[in-house]
Image (cartoon, rainbow, N blue to C red; front, side, top):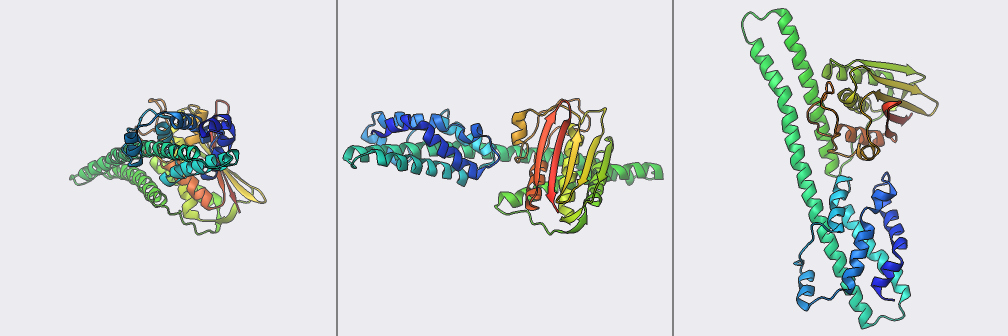
Length: 369
């Protein structure tokens, strides 16, 4: 059987294996997202195998000089894989697995290896290499774009609290500043320092994971209510205009890295404060059961679309919200929820998000004792 015909006739079988392999790389993605542009890529491969090709075109392909199509399915696949959090190694592994899968499934359908089948395999490998090259180019372009955006946002967000602290220093150095004025200025400096501290901590943790490391945790006996109260104090300092409430029930002790978990809930509370509605407080609810401690951070505000919920824990994701929301920064590093997930996973726990008109936006963290 011709290879191109085999791909067309066994498309679903190949796609099932593609999806299964992609799921080992990103277990939380939906089947649709896992398959992404796989069908279009395979159909393009089948078409290219049968298309005529001059010796020069074949030589250019082998040397990586063939013209690439920025609008191809492979190019779009590379962009979306970068946005979905795949590494470059994972992207190339997908194409390596696709190549091996197609050939493994096809070879039993041919009687003997002839010059024609050898030529088909050569054309197939050339086309897969071309698709991979197109995907890598767009992946790299998207990664550079995300980095540049990240640096621009970081500069913007750090400039605001720095300006506040600079202004505070100028006021405090004036003669005749009253104690009441000094106290007000000091509170502003404290809020600015808290905001900068959150951003810098998130940046350091993201850098660690981006370089292939894991966030270290050192669990010891701790009380989750004490941890969450410290996180509430952080959130109050950064968002004094927001009302926070805490409810707690059950045994909340367990083996936790208190400093890391405080970082998790500081990030979740800060996120909730930015996207809340004016009329409702941000609630943090703690419940202890025999095996796990469950903490929910809830806020009322715009409903997050289902598609956004799937990517909300990815790094550098920024949600679009209404401009008139109180307490929301004009920009955001998009790292807080990513860091919260990494720390939670390092504890052997889970973190999920849900959003509806009825319940608001709820982040649920479950941690084994």
